[in-house]
Image 1 (cartoon, rainbow, N blue to C red):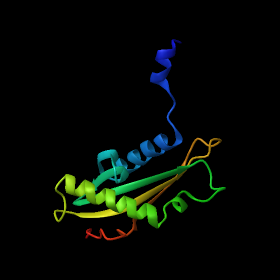
Image 2: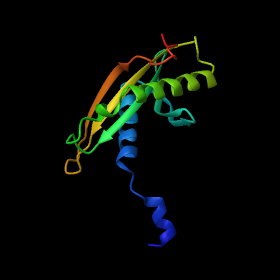
Image 3: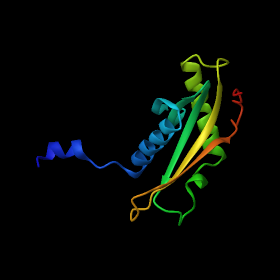
Image 4: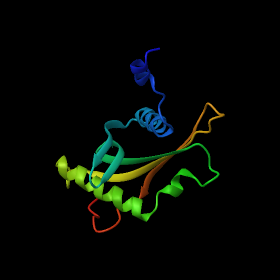
Length: 137
């Protein structure tokens, strides 16, 4: 195979596979995905989805095992504050402040290499907005 053609068939990273699985899960649950990997200087939101009239900011954490802790262990108070700031920026950019409810969900995925089937845990309303940006209802 030609070298330039290999770049088209790169295998997805564990994180990319986890986000794709999370999107499929959310769609099956009736969510509408409106954005993926929304990046600003304030941070990145993995998935922005809508469930009825609620905008849902989803953080996806994928690990190959739990030897060094669960995927949710990676979401500390600093991460919650960065996500809150990024979500506020997203809502301002799309003129959503005061127009709809919002919440933060976490999807934790453990995807061992030896197992074909990953374990997905969806935690709705995983944390409250933190810091000085508590504008969500």
